[in-house]
Image (cartoon, rainbow, N blue to C red):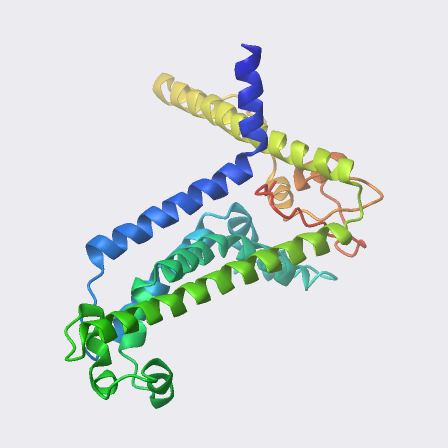
Amino acid sequence: MDAFQGILKFFLNQKTVIGYSFMALLTVGSERLFSLVAFKCPCSTENVVYGLVFLFAPAWVLLILGFFLNSKAMRLFTGCCVNPRKIFPKGHSCHFFYVLGQITLNSLVAPMMWLSVALLNGTFYECAMSGTKSSRLLGLICKGKPQECWDELYKVSCGKTSMAPTDNEELKLSLQAQSQILGWCLICSASFFSLLTTCYARCRSKVSHLQLSFWKTYAQKEKEQLENTFLEYANKLSERNLKCFFENKRPDAFPMPTFAAWEAASELHSFHQSRQHYSTLHKVVEDGLEHSPEDDETTLVLVGTAHSV
């Protein structure tokens, strides 16, 4: 039993790594499925559009899904049209763009994985580049090749050119090599940028490593207990309402947070060194609903975490 709990604890501690690994495997599988089942290069003048659509359209869809599934994005934009002060609070107008940047970086993970895998495979890039009409690109691709390369490059992906089979295969391998080089450049650039942002965020941190670890643990536990409390109170309230409806009697008073309390607890959290509130809910409970937006607050970025409480 102890061994099982130890294994479970290990997986819980590594859930971020496991989540990204699962996302990478899912991306690889989806790309292979698209390449084998859905993708058929037309080998015509439409090669460029067709290849680029298969290369970038799934990445765009994944980016949109990343925003939709990000709870922090939903918290940021909920009610912002009714009350713009929610996203542009007085004295902290730039905080919106800061949080939006965090959300965007988190949402870019899946699209970057898709682009990297698609470029490493080379199928989409090969189709797109074989349809180019740019004389400069044609000069680079067809350098040292017969004249047919300039006229029939769009047929290379299908192997239907009038060139020798060896020249046709060399062109395909050259285009795939270019795609893989771009893929590795993208992976290296994304990895280096991720390292820089993580180091910068930790360097600017106003709290110690131990307190940061405690903050992450608290945020996760509060999120879990908040969901359980939602379910518990929703069950009690629905049970009371149904009972009163069928028994045709007036309901008893049911304690619930005020509208102002819901609004205050739904705001994005900013860290204040002097008070050490670890979430917006913590701040509302400790300070009540009267808090000044002009307070000098320092936002702490929890890079690599998915908490939004």
